[in-house]
Structure formats: structure tokens, C-alpha cells
Length: 270
Image (cartoon, rainbow, N blue to C red; front, side, top):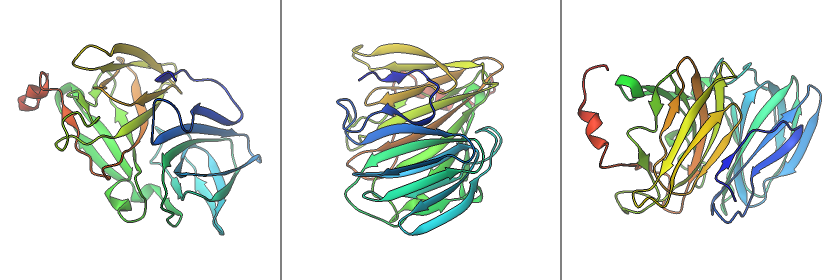
């Protein structure tokens, strides 16, 4: 399984990172693209699943509940997300009221909870970083979901043009446990304007991974280990949906690269 997936046009459901992959133990990812009036039905199987509406409006049914007029943003840069949490071992159906793109975020689970919807006004916004690594982070399924999900942590990050996120470079692969928990993660990117690009770096201190990817609208990235900072090209805003999970709970304890941790001490804008 490749860690980096280039965007492809596809109608209906598109599998991006498969269930039970050799790389990821807990995560899988796909995308639903529908024209207005089209429907898609599926099962969550052994995965608690979050449907993040990237664009459009939909009707969703799951576990005897129905939500109408979910979503509504024109794209990920035009408003906060609407997200539906669906428990494992459940069936669901989604119908597009307008043209619709939905990220399907899957986390391995064996505990079944009640489905719920996180509305845009319930998304918690954080301003993170400083200097040229300022970014806006939206918590969608985080502390607000304690006791309502098993493993999933999920949100969206917005990089300012020309600036960094996941910076100073950090990781969460459990190498320095218990200071650092072991959490897998998946990124799904969008660019504004959409012809834009950014750079995803990925490395380990022993040099076994030392890669850089040009990220464009619709690409995705699976992170099983290593440091993974992101940069947006000048003039272009980069967005990425992120979700993560592991065995040791839902606490975020990222481990900064010791060589670059010192930048926290910088106070002046650069």
C-alpha cells in the first residue's frame, strides 16, 4: 500500500485507503461523490465512521434516524463542516440534495455507540502556531465526543498561504511512549484556489523515511509513523481533513522533533 494517493475523478464511492490494509491497523478512508438526486447506501462493518460533508447538502439515514438538509457549504473554505458519526455494524443511506462530496473516515471499532451529527456551530476553532506557521484548526470529533465514540479523533486544518502546519515537525507513532502515544493518521487535502499546491514532508530520524510530496486538490496521505509537516505554496491556502486513532485512547500527545522544538521560543514575526 502506498502512503500517498493522488486525486482521481470518480462518481459514487471511491476507496482511497482500504480496510484491513498492510500499512494501517485502525484506519481506512474513502470518498462519496454524487450528483443531485443520486443515492448511496453502505454498511460501516467493523468501523465507526464519520461522514464529513466537503461540499453540498444531503439527507442521511442511519439506525432508524434521518437528518435532512445536512451540510450546505460550497467548498471546505466557505464554512465550517457538518459531520455525521455512524457507529460500527450499522447501515446508512445518503441522498444528495445538491451535488455532493463526502469524506468517509473509518476507524476500527468493536463498541457500538449512538449516531449523532456535529453541526457547524458545534465545531471548536483553535488558532495554532505563530510567525510563519500559523494555522486554524477545527476540532470536529475531539473532547466534545468523549463517551460517544470509541477511538476516533477528527478535525480540519487550514494553512495560510505560504505557511506551515504540523509544525514544528511532530509525530505520534509511540516511539517515546508514554510521552508519545501511537496514533495512525490520514490527511485529505484541498487547495484554494483549487489549482494550488503545497508540500507534504515525511521523515524519520533514522532516515528510513525521507520523502516530500507535492500535494494538490483531492490528494490524500496515510501516516503510520514519522514526522509530517505541511507547507502551503505562496498565494494558496491549503486545507486538510485529518483523523486519527490508536489503541491507547483519544488523548493527543504529539512529540516534537527535538532538533526543531526550539522554534517555540521565537517571539517575533518573521
